[in-house]
Image (cartoon, rainbow over all chains, first blue to last red; front, side, top):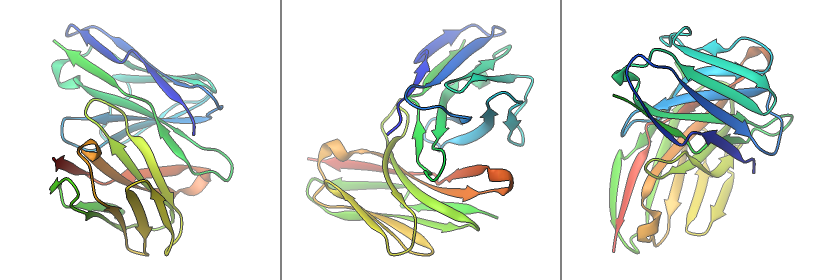
Length: 116
Length: 113
């Protein structure tokens, strides 16, 4: 199966600062990556779909100016939380989708963001 | 509206006590159903993909089955290390070649010695 990494694995930042989270597909090229947010004891909620070389597609209710997504290459997507507030504290997870006839889905290990 | 429902929300078992987790779905354009295991503070770990009704897959103490309306994750003689949240997700094909993965809320399983 695919190997997906995220960096950092956890981060603490002050309110008002910006934080960048990286998602890397280590062993195959991913034209599409997905970003999820997960609050404690809740399931994963899709935030946005990241497409290589084009603008991300955001789910309803997700502020695109607050959660900036850049998919600069076939192996890297970044999520930047701008002007973070305590309510942005969450577990952020990326997903990589298989290509061609494969519908396999692989998740990164997640990034724990705490905004103080 | 596409929907995925998992039950029970939480399940407590004694070691060795077999049971089943349920994932029911009402969606159009199903491309696959996935089961994941998630430990606290970690990303989901892939367990199984099922593509068509009648399909079954097994891995150690776990067995996943699929019908046209639901999937079951059977756990045989569970051990404490099987304690985790089990997530079910359905993959839908959308127009334009895109896909969408919809998650259930998960079942929190606790296996006690």
